[in-house]
Length: 365
Image (cartoon, helix red, strand yellow):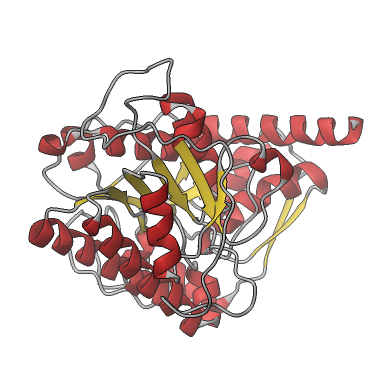
């Protein structure tokens, strides 16, 4: 799932503390507001200027890479509150941005002529349950800052939601787009709040708000960030490195999942979709659903010596038991042409190949 924005102990409240200074690298001021999807261009002009918050999490770096190929390197600014790795810092513009500091965030939007804002900063499900105060601060107060600034400056804003926005009373297989939502985690409650606030701002203030409910996201390049579906990333690394894996969910826990390339492509597609094609502002997207046992058996076709044991974490299991088994996503397929490319077998093949190649490169260096 989405990795939480890194926090260095104390978290500033919006508008508090001294003025924060930040450095901007390779930032062009030649973009204009971007209203509709446009074709590829070999220049950075006449393209959206994009800010990604919480950009050092699971999805931000990958989305920045995709958007930079699409719109030009200097038109996509990655941001977070911690120092990026060298390869991220040198790949394109990176700045410090604290979503709880309203003034700092507003200055970034104004000074860099931002037209699209992708809001990835969040505290995830399991981490949120261990620190509810922090989750409220980041997931709710931070969201309010984003929506207010986006409305004030006429931005197109994307805020991801999640399967965690549903609860035990929601239909689970499949979960429709419109149904009862009664999540039992602060993460889920904050995501329902984000969906409703974004849709309210759209109808009340004409904010161009767009939202996708992500399944569990699987990527070989990212480290787990406190999500309930993180086992589906960890198992691949353990399978390649040690051949042993301890799973913290029951073997029969079925959840919807998606490979990161599908997720990032879906995000780009919803961002580029003409506003008049969007009959909704919050969409389910689905790709595959599987259990830990299903995933283990598929990996064992390539690595038959993999041994998986189960040590169920009651907190994570209770969360998973209230989440969808699959998402019904016909509206996304109808309105803006969503179509996934990776099924379980292709996911396993791709993940194992990627991790094996990365390990070989690391050993050779």
